[in-house]
Image 1: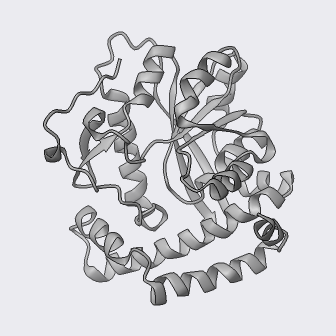
Image 2: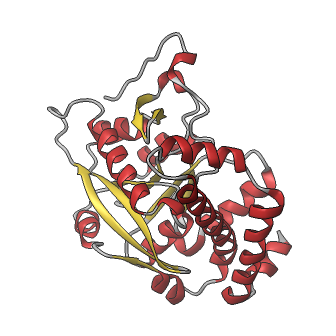
Length: 290
């Protein structure tokens, strides 16, 4: 832990030098998850040439190593610096609901530097719970909780979310979920086509929105330049949900996420084993969305 604390004290300019070294190491020496990345890109972008896909992969490694050093740096950034580096183009869409006493759900993805967004939202006047999957390593779990708690964001392990929703039912905030993760129980996932793959999504986000009557926003993150990001909210749905067909919220999220990935393909987490499950593996798929 001390090593990462000392590392976080280094200026970002020096840390980006470390990122450049890691980029070279992961791409050309270690070839980190090269086969996974290559296969993911090949199936997701069959219309692109091999040269185009290689360019996307190189951009991905650059994004990944920047993500690593920026995440390490976050606890040592000043509030003004992070506020300047994470801008919100239309924060009033969410703020007006929070000011009215309403909690909202933010559906983000593994794009650009998603780790900065919850803390950035707090600094822009939007309290946030950062929902995450606990890590298996106690050391890195503690490290990431420290990082994610920067500037007043609240890291919430996924399995404790129902209890958190009850305890904080009268506290307006963004419930921020990185919603493109692989479900733990694919037999109970919501399955749909995504980037030319039959893909499972967590059904819990839509279930939560419907059961709590919460509006849902898609959270798009784009890189303005190195170390600077812009967040844009898009309303996916809002109550009442009585006549909204099951799966609509997840389908709208999927469509906007795919649009984002096609606009900024190198910024998504292509090393993620997103498609390690397929529907044919399971005898029965049972999903509850309401």
